[in-house]
Length: 32
Image (tube, rainbow, N blue to C red; front, side, top):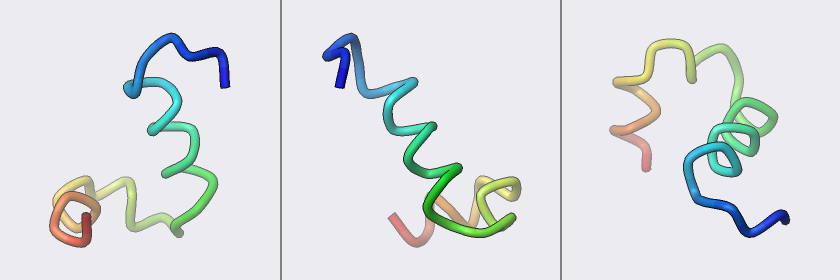
């Protein structure tokens, strides 16, 4: 990765990995 920060990198991975559940945010945090 670019090694900038976890913010953008994590967001990208999360968006690509899980389904529309990420949109909820709460479910995403619960699972993580």
